[in-house]
Length: 399
Image (cartoon, rainbow, N blue to C red):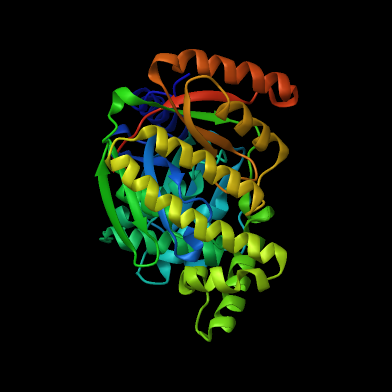
């Protein structure tokens, strides 16, 4: 199964927007904001750890026109209801939960820029809430559109910073910069290495080659809202571990785990409470996997890269202690399927999907086997769970 064709999805969205909202066709602008995968670097960006990211050809699409006032009028093909708000007096809450992202983007931008024009927009996410960072995708769509209609120039790192501010301050998710950085800097046929501490990005060509693998997204049928899971709790536990390790090594300014040396963890880790030891263990071992994985990618050693993905997922389960039974079951099914090179669950791991790299010669059979086995294991979501092929693409773009 493939994600919808971008051009066809764009045309359908525009036609619906024009017909149902009475918007002149010549005035409509279209944004495509892709989703992302993170093969390695699970749950460490909020601690300043390095991560690997790649944008994929599943998108948030937004058709929009400016409003002469500061009014926002939004509809979504994914969710019921309308979101209406005004930039002059942004409310504490919107009428629909999905409006929180528009509100967050508007407030983050208002902190730094004068904005007077709003949007009338129609959105469609190809697989929202699935663990491929649809939240950062839609936030970046709002920011791009608001900047466009208000003649504001935003540099790439401005977009990263504003997206994080919207998530941290106005949505209540204490995440790092993996998601938005991957989407802003995404390049087709490239893997990104993101230093989340120094805020730098390097891109590396697809050394293994397209003929070496296909990317699979196995959706569990369970969407998740990270602010209502244990995500923020895990972030705080990592900070607690950093603080205690810093005290041991006489470094009172340490706030996150990347402020602490691995040598300090090796020396003092066993003095931490058991659950904090596990969080720190995951961080330092995942940093090592990212470094090894980048070398393996550059040298075309995809089997080693895939092994590190599986190890990363196992560490997420054993040491970071995230994930639901359904997502654990799905990971077990995907990782044990013939032809699978490597896999791990994606996003916060409390629902969502599993991403995998699979041998192209066995890809079709692998997808069918995953679908069958998971639906048998979790028949309650058989109508929602699905397995997709996807490929790398560029970052946010106007169509």
